[in-house]
Length: 187
Image (cartoon, rainbow, N blue to C red; front, side, top):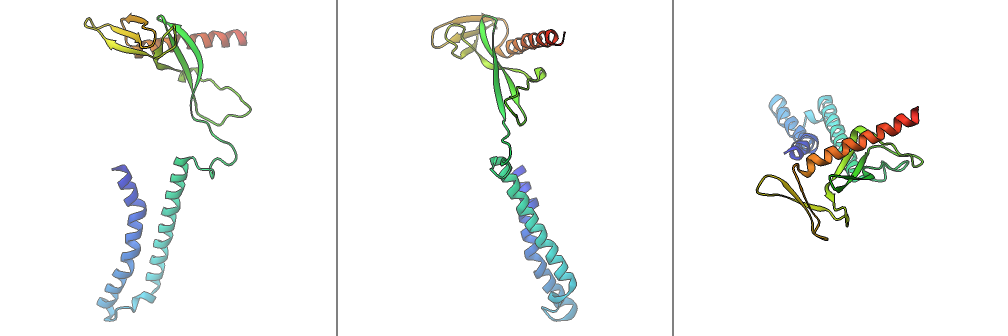
């Protein structure tokens, strides 16, 4: 629905207005003067048609810019290439499984600098097997506990909380370690 609304508001309406303008002008000219094409040379028609054409061109250019941004086209990345996504920064053992902690990459990086915002760290789920580092499967057993199973080596772990809850706890531990590290550096 949002796409249709955007399309209607920027391109289709502009085209319709450009097509309706001469038709309405010819009809009004016939009603007012008795001649079909007398108002086509009026300043009103010329100005309104010019404005509608500018609107059409601007909407097409705007649409092209939006499409190029979505495609991450070379037009926008010719000077520096922004990097988006996640960077894996640590493997943390917690609750007898391995959690991969990742940092979002938001901005353009220069000269290999590593910018870690500890408030935006997340743990990659599902957790990994401590033996073979394969992703674990999670199932709820009859008693409401969560069973984490490795499909490769058969490692099993029963836990009271889900992987989602435990991943948040693992991130809290990593955040505290980063805070300790920063405190040691500053002192």
